[in-house]
Amino acid sequence: MATSVFMATCPVIIQYGYSVFMATCPVIIQYGYSVFMAIYFNLFLFSISDPLYDAAERGDLKELKRLVEGGHDVNQRGWRERTPLMYAAEKGHTDCVKYLIQNGAQLNLKDKDGWTAVHLAAYRGHLEVMKRLVEAGQDVNQRDRWTRTPLMTAAEKGHTDCVKYLIQNGAQLDLKDKDGETALHWAADRGHLEVMNRLVEGGADVNKRGGWKRTLMLAAVEGHTDCVKYLIQNGAEMDVFTAAMIGDMAEIKRLVEAGQDVNQRGWWERTPLMWAAARGHTDCVEYLMQNGAQLDLKDNVGSTALHLAAEKGHLEVMKRLVEAGHDVNQRAGYKKRTPLMQAAEEGYTNCVKYLLQNGAQLDLKDWYDKTALNLASKKGHNSTVKLLQAATPKGRTYTKSHCIVCIVSILLRSPHIYWGGGTTKVNQVTFVAIFVNKCTCHTKRKMAACDTDLLDFFFEKKLFSFFFFEKLVLYQKKDGCGT
Image (cartoon, rainbow, N blue to C red; front, side, top):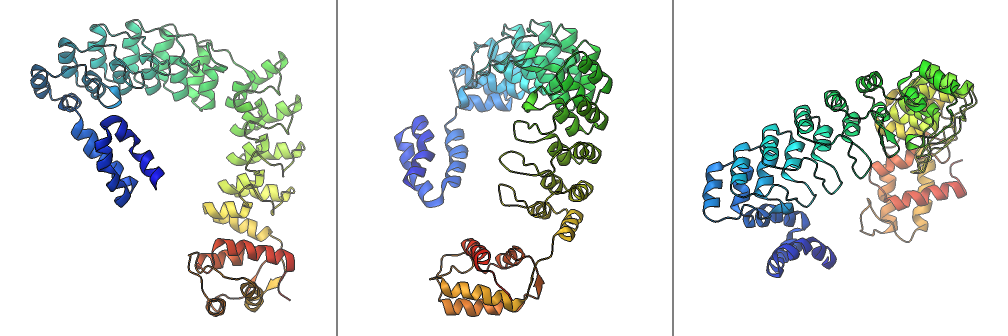
């Protein structure tokens, strides 16, 4: 408790001093951290903040004038080290911005994130505010803490008019942020076609790389087909990855015949085959396999082409991959998922059926100890669940009495059992009596020897704590039960 109180109140001590900290400690101890945070934000921050910030944020020009004429500093810092000018710019209050500039507000001051007033106006798309700031001398190429300019911010948010104005007033088109991305990269990634058009018309390079990323690939990965077409029309260089993503068979053939490696790695360590499989381009998948694409390669999370096709429900692609020799039980990444698990979780019954017909193992479990049936059941895919249940091999028959004998024997071996997952110890005999009484509502069931159906039933009825289930499963595997 002492540690949590200290961690919660550190910001208060730093910003408001020890006396405020002492006042808040009893609140946290008695009512908890969530109540403290509500008080912290609604009482301390806003009651202690200067009314000048409030007036600027509300756009109350009359109050703003009164406060400034009364001697308030127009460049004082508030929350996140923002000035009144920044508050007014973010909210789009053009008249307040103009007044503050006329009364000495400094234009190029930055907040905690390195944003200036023009960054905030660009983020929100306030064109008139931007005009006032730029006309007053605001630098349109200033960088924030991520080395992003106002142009990049406006491009990411799709504010076409702001982008156009910034370009007209000296914004540099090909500047890069810390990740190597330009304004055009941001627009392509977000699918803002009109913004892209303004940038390209202004002279942005459509083939400029952002680290190892290219503008065309960014648009293709996110599925912005109109942006992809626009970039190609304006001279963007095609590569085999992008061609596989968009299913451009003719371009894939041209690139492969020109010598591009069909097994080269790109974004997320994926090969052209993986991209074609993930997007469901059957003809591209066939061509790539015919030209040496390796089936068992994995991406950065361990998925193969078959995993990606199963996850998206591309049955025809799956058929081509399996017919070519892809292992239907291959595991993917740390989750240890098989293609069957991927298809079952997404509810693609036809894909599940095909995988079962071609050797997919039902009893395999992922990292979280879940089978394909568990995953389909959790997501509520009833038709998939029925198919998997029908395909499950039938085990020995267990009656209610068999299960009672088995579980009661474990109860009598245990020094104590926690009732209902709680913390109250109960007498063994009493517990057995309660258990047998509860079992009377459970009819005869058929299940495999170590199936968890019965355990799930009792767990849902809150008869046992979870650790007891684990013990029961171990006992079943070791000794067995029934006739």
